[in-house]
Amino acid sequence: MAAWHRLSAGLAAALAVLLLSACGTDGGQPLRIGFIGSFTGGGHDLVIGARNGVQQAIDEFNAAGGHRGRMAELVLADMAVDPPEIVIEHLRRQGVEFVIGPLLSGEALRLMASPGAEALVFVSPSATTPDLAGRTDSFFRVVATTAEYAASMAQRLHARGLRTAAVVRETTNPEYSQKWQESFEARFAALGGRVVVSATLEPDDPGTFDAVARQVASAGADVAVVIGRPLDVARLAQRLRAQPGRQPVLASAEWGGGESLPELGGRAVEGALVQQFFDRDSNAPRYLHFAEAYAERYRQAPGFVAVMAHDAATAVLEAIRQRRAGESALEAMRGVDGLEGLQQTLQFDIHGDSSRAAFPNRVEAGRFVRDGE
Image (cartoon, rainbow, N blue to C red; front, side, top):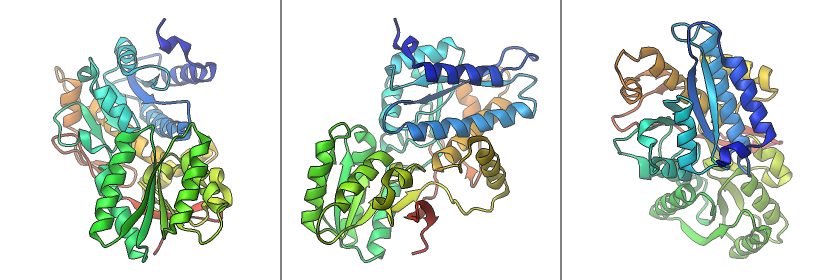
């Protein structure tokens, strides 16, 4: 039996609610749009935030009448349960052509290397691997690559007068974390900085957090840069704060900047420097409307991944709207250009790549605030 049929009861129930709420009774068959994420594990909060952002875009689309009377609905696929080929088969059986996701670089690379992937159009909110840049394929994204963001963080830390760094990365998503580390270290060294510790964390082995915390503390680095999930950043921060002596400034790559970080880390992550893919102080009318509706529905403010996922869904829905008779899904997606997202104009180059600014934030009094430096 395919692993898809072993989905948790909670995810199956969520899928049923999404299908029932999105389906229309008029206008023919629903427009089925895929959503790929890993719904279990330490990064599930980002997946849920992304799904919420996508669902809000779907609901807005349906409230406006859908497309020619056809309503859109989400078809979920869980990469924590199924291998890529089963995910692709499942989506194709459901009549899906457009997919929002995956979120992680490793997932994106595995999917794009799998048979049948060329029949689907993927629009990722957050997969930043440079290994998919500059390729003519069916992979699109609303974000730039790790090279740009890691270099930005190196410049930011150096501008603060931080000259020595301990760089710590998790090992489950090396397509992201290792590339980010390499880009950060290259830029930091070019600026005159020095990496004094380069260590890895095994998220499923709590002992590695204690060992790495001791290693970082003994090196006396100005800053500890963590590349991992919010849970990884929080766990290491707690171990670091238990070490004697001078404490390094804590910094996190974008992946660790999920909205759960302040709660997970508590006082240990106070003052942590994080880059996020959205401006939480934005006054853009589209964003303000989205944020108000999101907070009312989900009882929390949207994080960066919800904003990016909404943008990815907006691009997919626009491709559906403007698709001409006889045009493939890929051709329709390539025709999307200059579309207004929540905070920026969405533009894809000929390879489906995009750019997106990263905004400096820090944790203060248990919440994220813009870091004015």
